[in-house]
Length: 447
Image (cartoon, rainbow, N blue to C red; front, top):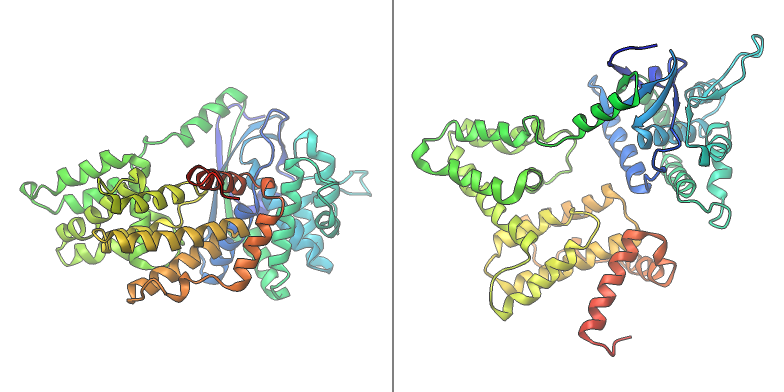
């Protein structure tokens, strides 16, 4: 048994193998990943597959407490390990023959009848969900039965999440041909990596978890960008002070999000790699190579930081003409994501003194975002819609841009969700209740 900290980088075929028997302790929080996170994981893996390169795909790290040479309690990483097990199980049940058996071996230790060794799960989930997970996920040919379970049968939140994620992954992968599914399974097994961090006791595991999740200890990407930009400028230019004023105003998290949004606005594509790699390539390097570091600050950082601050403060200053703009920004801030922000930043930067345009723009943007929330769109299609909108706007389109228009099917699906059990999804229910409360406050007679 290990006496010290150990950290090793492994492909998933060496994670879901006899070297590791993972157990989720009873004190851990329930499984809570939703279809958004599960489908995002699949999309990220699909992107890695489409790049067709030798570059491995990293899923981050998990923190474990070692109980025996092969037995480990999972302190951090439950959501990923559980979702990966579901994904492998879905691929298993969509495959046949020896390939299906090999995928099954990643979910269940096959055992050895001759040696009297029984099969057992690679991952043992919390006691409350253990039998359910084994029966409906880990045993072969179980996914169809899992997907068919009704809400009356599946009453707990973790089990409902397991069912919904399996259904979403199955629906997506069923549209792939068998060759592409096999390629994905191979990528996951051989070229998708986790860093396994193990410790001998719970106390040290929690300390490691805290350090790994602490903010502000290491250099942020924006610190590196600052050194590259400000380091080339004369101190008398004042750009260093301007940079620091923006960073202090937004805070470290907001400042990083600003750079992510600028990358999206300039590149017009969804992020595929970490900010530290993409931002220089797609935004910063052209300025630096041409000796235009000051222009980066003046043309991008300062105007977009002012727009970013307005989306946070939701205050364009005094004047009745801005009341509607402030109200629409407040409504957008209630959403469960910030994917709407790059188009909003573009509009505020380009039309910052036009209250009528911004009010109309933000009204349409909120309508698009709210319908997306009601329909349960996950990250990839939602971001894709906003990127198409950005492209239309940068090409000179007005408020009647095609990407701003909702289809009849989108409207129908949104109305259907409103007429149904809205309260089953907390983020959707919260937004609907707050918007309804606002409507009734402004018009008590509204129904």
